[in-house]
Length: 169
Image (cartoon, rainbow, N blue to C red; front, side, top):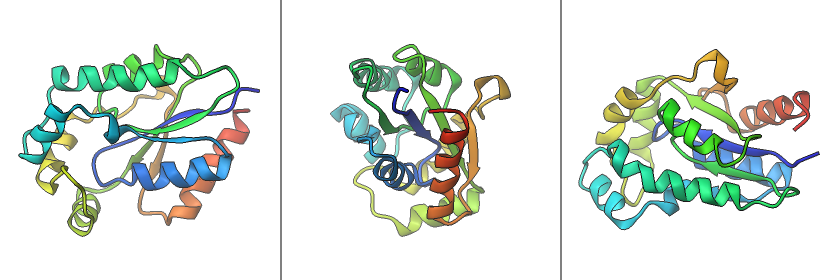
């Protein structure tokens, strides 16, 4: 059985990193913070409050895809990555055919509240609305597990673990 390869996706403030780190720890695979792979130009744009374009995200997504495709058959990985559009998710799926996605979603008010409370090096709360506009909600044919971030962390992670067990990850 191949260890899970997952992308925890969603807009800024949904908890991708927190959920991803906790999940990776609980299932015994490494965690990769997708934001750490943004090139300096993307970081500067976001820090200035400028939304990224598809072109801006292309190299970043390719870097994440390269990390996924470099995994040995017996290696798993949990990656945090916004993966806002289906085309971005499809780009990542090309890297490893057994890649799964978990979409963390919440109300705009909850997301904004979380963004106001957190410290982030370059993702200002002002970019939330552009991310929400860019987000293409996964469709049923994508078989993405979608979870409400209003749940506490441990039950949220437990739900993902249960889903992985049911689907023989």
